[in-house]
Length: 341
Picture (cartoon, rainbow, N blue to C red):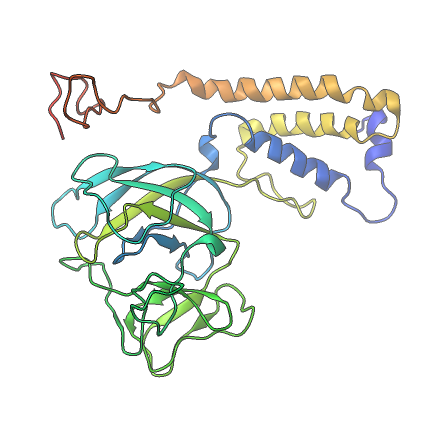
């Protein structure tokens, strides 16, 4: 489309995607930064399973790639995945910003909700064991793999197997995550220095396989720390993805849905005024951007017609001895009509 005021901005000599790419990234970041989460920006975090005494879990996809596009966690549940009941029992988890590092279970969670607290950290901030250090601790917390250590797949087990920690730092500083269960060999797994995420490694004679994760990818920390054995909990978490990056003018607007393309176009045009070399044209940016943002907020407000399920609920009443006063579809009435979990 031809906009006479904007021709000095977009008609750049030679072969260049600027400033269009910068503007597109600014607009997409503004859309993702609005209050309250967009449903179309949600995605399922790869599932992971509790392991003996392990609090931190670097997340990796089945194809070996690392989780790198998580902006923040929204919600989730844990499922007693090996339970033979149909349907399988589950509990809620509470997602938050930060959790402290811990070494073992220090309190009994019982059967209430939420059962776990969970937050994400960059992979380089998580805990990794040291191969061969056994239970000595030192800079680690113990539970480390050694020669001959057996890793048993937790899926299908009657009780959570007593496995060593499933993520270690190798001698070259790579962060490794166990991706194939089996028996450790006589030497530690070792990848080349600065190995590409997704690279696999195994020790001499080992049947286990370890995969390098991206240090700036994302992983999860849970609390309380699982015990040595017990229930295997499968974490099913939902997060909001980061804004996509425009690297070429052929980049699509995904995951932006088609019905919000007019919002993107209006905001893009407004940003073009900001980059104009003409002062009078540049002065139009403030009003145009305000109108574009108001249109975006109006679009977001359409979703507020739905009943909001995210609420604050008192932990306990003054006269009640029970912590379990959760009110929801299964228990719509508060104490004394509600049956405790």
